Length: 546
Image (cartoon, rainbow, N blue to C red; front, side, top):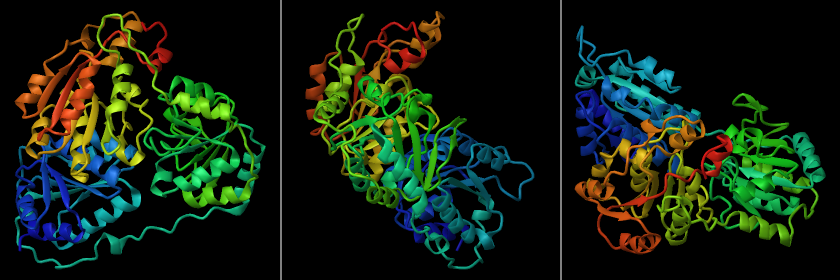
């Protein structure tokens, strides 16, 4: 047995079923052996797409994602996705090659560890075959325990040597056992309960910690007893999609009507949320509110700002249940009038007029919200168009993916690869901007080759949307941000997609019906106005044209 074969068996023992990979000299022998053991490979056209696909897969399934790249440039190509996964706390294991140990010089040889560690991920050099399997299984255990990407660097000459190490080694489930849920301290619960009892206008803000703890019923029960409204962070979007008194997402992407309600709250009970600056719009969202942070790792200061006034270390579900028992039963600011107000805050505005006659992005998203069925999985990316997609508030959380933790565009097609692999029977709808879609346009071929049921909706304003509005607001030339509208439909057809150019809203309704019947992926090139700036951009850059 060669080392690469032993590694393949070790990965099989970890229960990994799907791998996103791009092959090179330093990982192709292992990949061949792994394929023979039954691994489902998604072979991408760019290393970034492989690791990003694994990240989306891990985020949506709550499993550890797995990807593989070759050495040198294969590894340096993934240096944008690594900090995204680190900041989003996504567990990943990446099997990377390394230059040969026994060559004094190799063209693709670099010191790979500093690159990975600079991104916040963990690098494990595997230079001893007798401990290779131990390193592999520890990597999976570390990724699960710390919720972080771990990169294994294995020199490819070492991989091809005969393996003489142990045939078996304890796998990650034996090396790491998840700690039991953190039970709240009753004295802290009593303090938090007193704050809630004294509050007149409380809001419960749930994050991915609440999702992971399956704490939705507990949060809803707490809100009902406290008379509180419900909201989520952007990554947890859709958790309360079916509840009355929900404001949708908090932060800069909250609807304008929801922001007016948030301004009035006097207490936010943040459950399983990191209290990121964006979730509070830099502190402007809830200027009158005290903040209770109920989390397994609550913090007073987050991202350079004071974020919480009272910390309650606790599992989200157990903490919410304990608070429900401890507080008084009251109406709070739940009333028939507030129910109407919160429902109205989730309605997408009827906005259609634009200065140049192109489609209004809000009107496009409103139409998409009406036609996209709840069995579809929606993916929202970064960029100017993301504000509009965030207004789609009637879709369940487990069918909605948002990963914006590094603010990088260009990830949409990669997210789609990961979600479509995780849920092969689920139609996937990616809503992306034209600049973002072009960054990894080659992955259309990957989607088509793997026959994925994916619809890509490109909101095409012929520019980098955020940049043109900021440049206009500052009175600076927009030349470097405006590129015109390429023929996306033609490009898509060249990759084997069904391609459409959309210039009227009626086409969207008919096109979605056709998407369910065609046997290949689809792309819609939706021509939107570049004269319409989102309220988020306008608030940050006064003077931008409406």
